[in-house]
Amino acid sequence: MTNRIVLSPMFGELIITALCGVSNMIFLDPPPCPICHNASRKTLVDHDTLKRRFATVIIGGEKIRLTVSVKRYICKQCGHVVSARSPFYPNTRLGSPVVDLAISLASRYSFYQTSQIMEMLNISISRSAIRTLAQNREWNITTVPLSGLLLPASLLSLGTLMNTSHGRLTHEDVLIACGFSTE
Ligand SMILES: [Zn+2]
Image 1 (cartoon, rainbow, N blue to C red):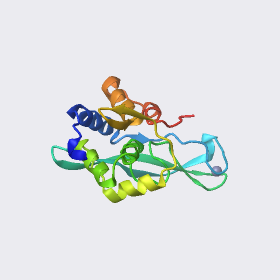
Image 2 (image 1 turned 90 degrees about the vertical axis):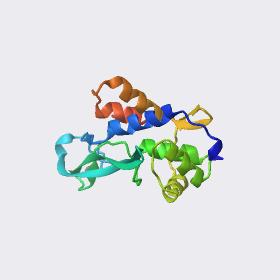
Image 3 (image 1 turned 30 degrees about the horizontal axis):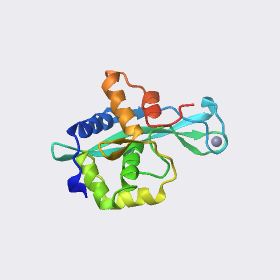
Image 4 (image 1 turned 135 degrees about the vertical axis):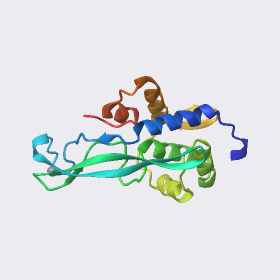
């Protein structure tokens, strides 16, 4: 029952800090081409930059959409579009730490309760979005038990990173905190 869960406001603040810190970042660094494995930066040509929704957070009762930009390239060897490394899982529409949180909570709570708890943690997400994520999950999430909840390590690392980086945050720092490879 969500009304029996008492969450420290500290978690909500940590989550806002973590997600807002990533907002407006531009991810530029391409991985090797996933199709032909071409790793030479010279054979990737600039294509476009996508603005992607990272999270919708609730600040002072208002829903605020946080976005990041992800540059895309075209592989000259095979013609495939290669997206820069960014904190998103394939075929998802929200930043990976938000996906991690939704899936961690949905492993224990109903989709409705998960959406309520996420709202208490200042994140707006629909039940249907949670259901889709929970049903299609294809990745492993490291969780940490805190105050009776299972919270994803990614979100906690990201919050800690924001609190200690003093504005000198690199893309690599964010990707590593979110559990992605940078090599
Ligand atoms: Zn290629």
